[in-house]
Image (tube, rainbow, N blue to C red; front, top):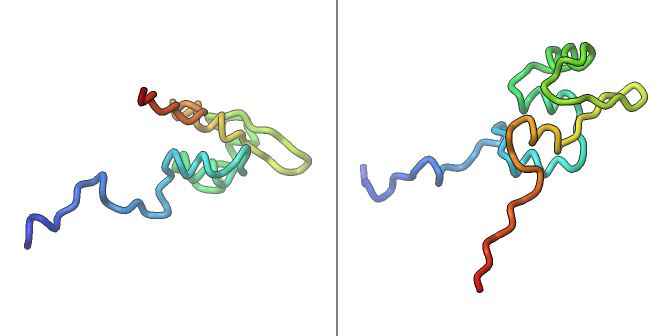
Length: 91
């Protein structure tokens, strides 16, 4: 095995099932409860049960017969800034 061929954890590709901050931000403004469940490691049924009981770790908006969750609220619950950080000035 060639040691120059090894990769660090930072260089390894991220599987599609892993929720990165960038992937969460790419959801847009709001998302559904099933997606929130995936992000927080819950089953779809558990996520909806918690949403009905108002016990998800994020506020749930009821829009007609649908539940929606703010992506900004998800990021806040995860302790991540809702805005992209401003790059440092090069001047």
